[in-house]
Amino acid sequence: MKISYFFVFIVIFLNGCNAIQPSNDLASKKQQIKATNSLPLWVINPKVKEGITAVGMAKYSKYGLKVMKPQAKMDALAKLAGKIETKISQNTKRTSSLNKNDNIQNNFSQSTKEVVDKISLSDVVVVNQLITENGDYYVQIVINLSSTIETPK
Image (cartoon, rainbow, N blue to C red; front, side, top):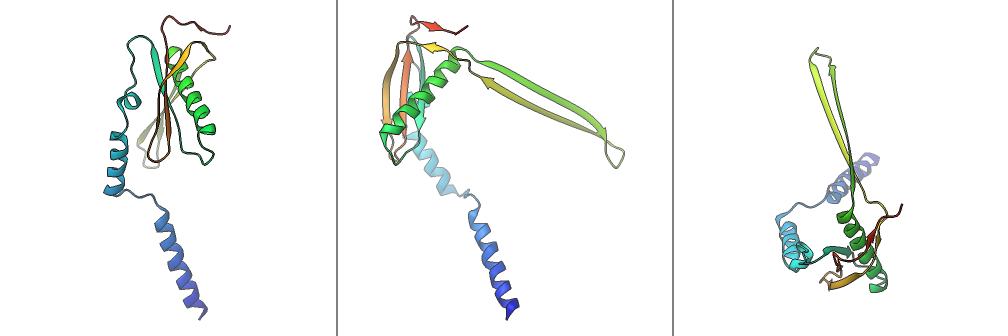
C-alpha cells in the first residue's frame, strides 16, 4: 500500500514539474507579435526631428498610474541619459588547456558592461503617453538639442 502511494506521489510530482516549464506554443508567440504590432510607431521606433527622445515603460501595477508614471518616466530618463553619454567596458578571456584525451580545448568568454554616469537634464518634455490593453504604461520624453546638458564634475 505504501508503495502505491509513493508511486502516485512521484507521478503527480513529475506531472507538476512538467507544467511549470514555459510554454513555447505558437499561440503564445502569435499573441506576443499581435501585442507588439498594436503598439504605435513612437514606442517601437522613437524618433524626433530636433532633439533626442526615449521611451520608458512600466508594467501594470495594482496601485495604478500613481506608481506607474514615475517608474516609466525614470526608465525613459535613464535611456535618454544613456543616449547622451554611455561608457562601455568589455572583458575578454581566452584560455587553452589539455583535456583527458590529450586534446587541446579552447575556451572563450566575454562580458560587456554599460554604465550611464550622472547627467543633469533640463527641459525634458513628455510628448506621448499610452496605456495598453493589458495595463502597461508607456511614456515618450524629448529633450531639445539646444537644451542644457551638463555632466557633474
